[in-house]
Image 1: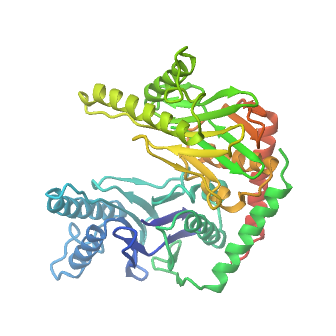
Image 2: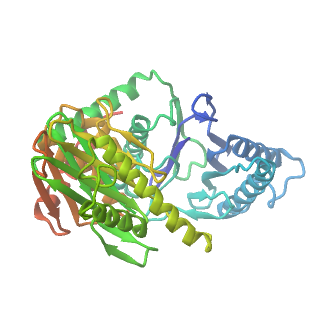
Image 3: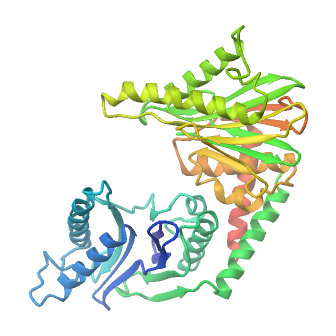
Length: 241
Length: 241
């Protein structure tokens, strides 16, 4: 499985994904699930993926092919699309097409393939936008009231986000929030695993402002995780019922 | 949906369930999901239910009928079964039978019905035991390493249990832990709702030692929930990344 989360805040956007892929619990591998498409200053698009690897890899590869195609049009390339809404359309259409193709191949074996994606982006002159693309290609968008979107194993890490993330949350606090949300997920579900990919897209920068890969032994992450456990245990001890 | 959790500790067992039932989001009702079968001093069995109400109600009603039947045998009545393992067998068999019956009725409409249960109990001279019964009637049991079992919307409330519940946890702390686990679930998922039913079965008492219904306006629960939110927010502020 997977856990990816994207935050849309006044100050910018923060994305975090894990990297664990498995086909059965005995076949575990590490694959990147966060992909950047960037023309710094003009446009930035970050896509995170969850679901069947054959669907997500093919979708990302075809999106990239369409971008690099010398005959790319605003209808085909997410780097030429006139709006972020159009970007979500192109990604949704590609995802649904690939999913159907893979599904047809698998249907002979009574299996199905599914995938969903988070698309975060901004183009010069436009607003920052954050979408969740469903396997069928339709999508929803983060709003003032719901400033975060999650895909994959999203439930373990939702309570902490519900409690601390607001549209006005700073980018530093936002990174802390998504890391603690991931930490809870890692602890409670073996199918989500390190390393992690995190990025920050500051408002109006139209580029990936910060990028960080957090490896399994990362000292800073471990310290944060332990401090959080201590906070929870101490807090738990002090609360009375 | 539902959230029920059972803890098996050195000092006893703690069970907590919500009461929300819905058939579609516009058809919400309150139904008890925790049922006690008790012959104080000789045997106590607490059953919690999740899933299709028509399956769980019928299963509980038939189990009760079998107990009250003047010709009840150790094979048919959970109050006469020689061991708790046999109790789990009887409940599992009844659940699977009812589920199949209801499933057949619904299959004409391309719908299915499913349900799962938690069974906690002890009989005089035996050990306390805690089972999770699957829709097919098979089951797993809580052990030293995994002292809690959950059914329904279990993911939101798992991180806090993973962090604080050990076999040696006191019954007071255990009640706090399940209530905070429920609190996280209530906040993150609208389909789980107050009031709550909580019970404590002290070791070797072979009866329900404490029972409490927590209503929506419960002052004590609200205070605990707010204190916990404060703890999390303060802790979040203090942690550095």
